[in-house]
Length: 263
Image 1 (spheres, rainbow, N blue to C red):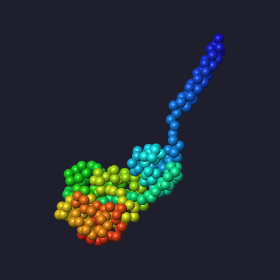
Image 2: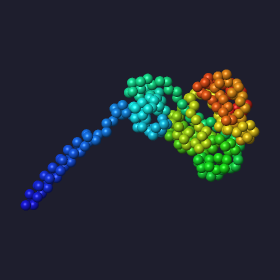
Image 3: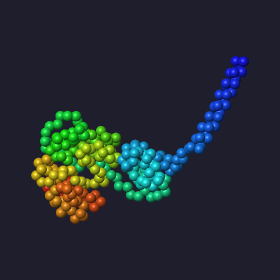
Image 4: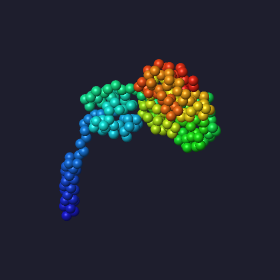
């Protein structure tokens, strides 16, 4: 009697297992989410850093957006032109010209150039220091604080603090924008790789307050704007701002700048 029960139990379990297997197999086909083959191929082309520099949550999201035509084939800043070329083959379109961009710290408020409002001895974190009076110890309220929050945010080792100011290695920078997002002072921007003349200041004060804050601050004198024959540099809200699409790197603005704030 016991053997009959055992055999019956085994048979019943086998039948249940078969039924469940059939059910799962059918369900997997019925409820299967179809994945666009283009998305898979595009994802294979992307580097997989998931840095968010493309403006999307990660490489998976970018791949889906490109496949749907919601993002450009050259939107990955890390992969650059080589990745854009591969993706363009998958999409069957032209990749177009890709201008390499790199981060640049628009501040030259070094320990020598920048004057201080007070001595800061707290935690070396830019976000914390920016919440203090005067937005940090430097007299300039738009200066790089130099505590390395951007350096910590960079996954590619492209940044370091030199003499109290963050500096970018353009050879290592992939324009992922992590440093830009991390900087509480908003003094980091993207510029074309190899650009020779860049406004190295973010000070919005005019005249004497700007001069008191830093030895190389822009004072909104307008000399650069009057000198440039291409209309590539304008004074906007007391700060010289350059249009890199118009600038031909002639260097006239840099030569005429009385404050030498155009690097």
